[in-house]
Picture 1 (cartoon, rainbow, N blue to C red):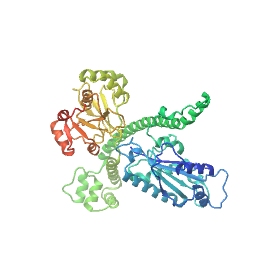
Picture 2 (picture 1 turned 45 degrees about the horizontal axis):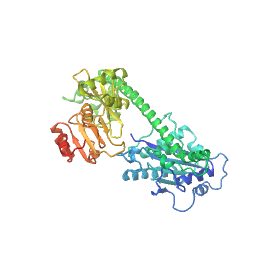
Picture 3 (picture 1 turned 135 degrees about the horizontal axis):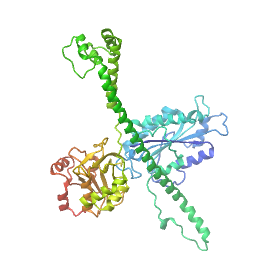
Picture 4 (picture 1 turned 135 degrees about the vertical axis):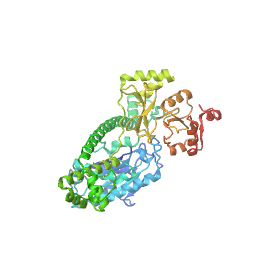
Length: 529
């Protein structure tokens, strides 16, 4: 899932405003910013007026209270996956078309929402993830400096988030969970989240050289001054990582509760449908009054009247009431409404995947089975178990989590230790949206050199063991049946695609990916593994 990001910071003094401009306008060197990349002003003219002057001109000659908010800085961005869907962890790159659409939507939203109260907005491309800094003067409808009227309540902040989310919804960006108790960072601290690229300290380069006759205490202070900015960034990144893990757990819990509620509502709807269908007007009587000899048995009284008489809902209700009385008419209307509601629910209710419950007490049995039957090393199983990709459920099934290439969970494969060792999809899984897949070898951010396609999660683990050690970064991906889709756009960019499945499936894959080869042929042509 990709989310829209909207944060605000109130600026109450001219000094804070000046420091903010120094940062956003790159008047000084900024850590994690590439000085070779030029940022783009998307709102405001190109004259040399500083931010404080623009704000003063907009406020005018009105009296400014000592506690007044002079300006509001708004940071607008999106999840990294939106700007670079195929490489979310490669900082500094982005899809130009997606970026242009995002900027266009933001500029339109700023203009529609705040008009000329926005004095400046700048697109930053010199950091890991593109984002926009916008400055607006909080004038109310009477032209008075009144930030409270715009952002002073929780309801106003909800409206702000709703408004921005609606403005970028057509881009596929989602609003955060409304009413969430998650605390948001101030904009200056948010930079650690925007710059998600890992920062590694190279002490050989970072530590200053001792000077002649310098005391240990003086040298210690110089080391602290040099390392503090980088350590602050690392600390912010660690906090953000912990927050993301917590958010993921909360989302899983929310999905599980939503799925339970959906199933309960579905059961209640079936009961309601069954009881209401018994109360509906007999179609045979309605058909007789309409002069019909034949009719569809799955129709209901009201829809049949509208269809035959070619009338709207109101006239059909009047016709039924005239022929059969008010009580019978109300039963027909009730049944028609239930049928319509059921159709709408089927068309629009989202299918939320809730993974099977983890049963640690059954894991040892699953681990032993996979090791003894398929010779999969315990160390590999333990590693995947710790990452939550393989575990045991309450029925001693081995659970293999399916994910899309962005790492979002889309389903689960259940491997039964009891029923002939067969695989099945867990209810609610979206088989066409994800796969069980793992990447091996090389560094985490290294480009995938080879993709190996196999027919099941267990075949995938066996292939990893057989091909170890891996010289290059290799993606293993399980296609569970003949209808399983391929991540075509991704695989087209992978130099080597190796298929270790049935011959018929190899032929169908080669039609879509001409450079794909069978595993045996690949082994003959290259000594890759």
